[in-house]
Image (cartoon, rainbow, N blue to C red; front, side, top):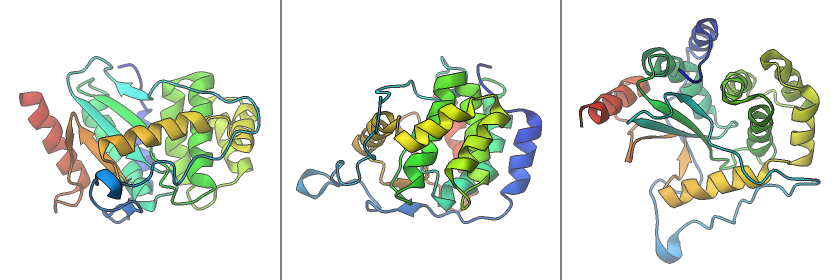
Length: 231
């Protein structure tokens, strides 16, 4: 596999996220809209960079990048329901589908923003880690960041970098200077074009997964993956 979390990390995440709701964070409407009623993608722009900005980065990917099945997950680092998904469901996806290279797993940033400062700031910190040390470290860092939700600060985000062998000064600078705002805004706008209106949102190939179907989130995602594999 091209990218993974350690089994210890997977198990610790599953334990940490034992409690949480299934609903999502919605601020742009429950359903996609079109025409004059569509949400304005410029309404919640990323904060302006205060220095040199990074204009583009590849999508963070785990599993088999060439897999015929793609799971695309859209998250806001300040959304409590994204935290639930990441701590409860994501470890099971890793164990069953990522580690066996059955899927291409993609992270997409969708700062609603739930929090004007940290929806963008934490996403920028995670992208700095990706830029410095790659996708493996990005996913490790993202998991650590969700564990710290509610306690975000520049110092916390910089300190987490050391746990994934990323330079703390680069993460600190990214948060303070909004270095990755163009990357995050492009990701958000692409999500709006796809019809994403809240977080977490999960697509398996071109089908959006109903995370409130009555099944567990993992059961709903697994069912969608298995259906895609059978096509």
